Amino acid sequence: MAHHNEVGKSGEALARQYLEAQGYRILEANWRYRRAEVDLIAMDGKVLVFVEVKTRSSDAFGKPEEFVTSYKEKLIVEAAIAYMESIGHDWELRFDIISILFRNERDYQLKHIPDAFFPGLEG
Image (cartoon, rainbow, N blue to C red; front, top):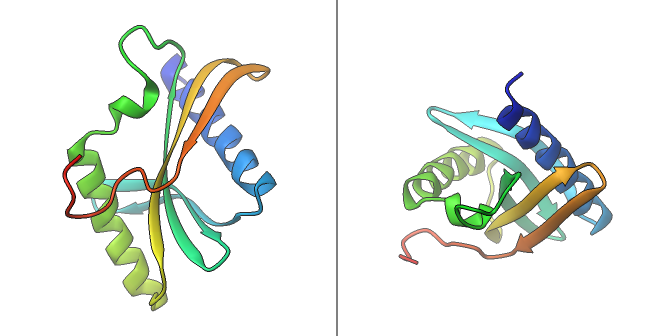
């Protein structure tokens, strides 16, 4: 597996552990819809949360969360709509980003950004 894929998988595992420790209930991991993949789908109390995890081994070219483009947000929103339709969702939802600067399993910085973006709002 390529190094960047290994870093990404490690980041997703750390994000999942973090969310579970915060009391989130993970519903799905790597949920796919057409060209989109939602890294984690979770419940935060009664709120359905779609989480994009961005992991980088260096911030030389910017913070990990800065790599979530408006195009990626659009894909996540499309996937979220499909997911909500599939489960008959009719309650509150949120789009979060978990940004991880990863050196190794013991040396990393994790930043959780709730409400990182919202459909229809340009950031």
